[in-house]
Every structure is written in structure tokens, then in C-alpha cells.
Image 1: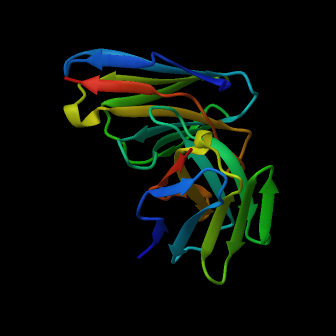
Image 2: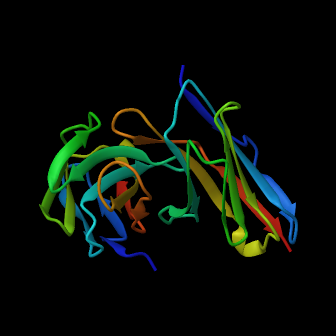
Length: 112
Length: 113
């Protein structure tokens, strides 16, 4: 069956460290993958998009990788700050209408 | 600040009420979406409008009725809802087509008593 999995547990890291979040999928052939940030009670905010023919994308302190062989995307936040604390969602664009398929999200807490 | 505005931010309604959620965007985006999100769950797609025409209905119960009066506005009409319909309702837009980032509003928190 088709499945998307993100870090099952909440992630707690110390300020200044690099946070690494994972998104694994099975039985999809995504054309692209997106990462969003969501704060409690608010709508998701787009962070990065990576296409199937791209290995890595960067934006300021954010980096995302996409390995279609491993069927995995890694999302890194370097020099993490308490303000980075939020839930991070990965979403795959797959299928004929490229409907987004969402992971459950990973809760990240950055401790000062 | 988001460029997608949703009203009201909070709504409490009884099961016999009729209410509407509204969404407005002035980004010139031609694809607009309604999502439903329960606590600790990802957004769940309900409807997609493309160029003001309904293009996707994810088998949503008829007590939810979407409407797209023009390219900037999206409504969700609610009638005879159930308590399990209580959730955060999110509007989103996308430039066009089926790829690219989604821009979400802040959501309307709906409680059905």
C-alpha cells in the first residue's frame, strides 16, 4: 500500500545544532516533494520544493535532499533557533493530477 | 502575514445552523482549495477549484457546499453539520495547474455543538 512516514517521535534538539527531519515513502513515484512549516492553530507555510530530478535544494538555513532510489527526503535546519520550533510537514506531488499527499508531520522543539 | 484571508477565524454552530466560511486572495492565483485539518493530522483535501470551476471533490458529504463566485473568492457553505465536522478549515491557493507551492490562509476554527 502507499505510505508516507515522517519521524514518528517529536524531535528535541539544542539551540545551535542541526535538526534533521526525514520523510520516507513507499509505492509512489513523486514528481516533486514539498516541505511546509505549521505553527499551532495556523495554516501551513511553504518552505521548499524539490523535483524528482534534483538532489538538493537550499534556502538560507534550510536544506532538503531527495533520493528517489531510497525513496526518502531529508530536511535540515542548520544553526537551529527556538523560533524554528513547529511541526514540519512533507507533501508529495504524485499521480496524474499531482494531488499533494501529506505526511503526518514531525514536531520539532528547539531548546534554548 | 499571509496573503490568503479567511473569515471568520472562529465559528461555533449548532447542528441545525447554516453558516459560511469565506476565503479571499488577491495573488492572481487560479487554483483554490479547501482543506480540513483535525488535531495532529495532516490537511485533508476537500475541494479544488481551477479557473473558477470545481475540478476535484474528494467525496465530501453534501452538507459541505463550495462556491467560487470569482477568481478571488472561495466560499464553503455549511449546513446540518455533525460534531465530528469540528476542525480547522484551511483555504489555499496555487498559481495555476497542479504543481508549485500552496499558499494557505490562517484557517477557520469550526466547532459544531
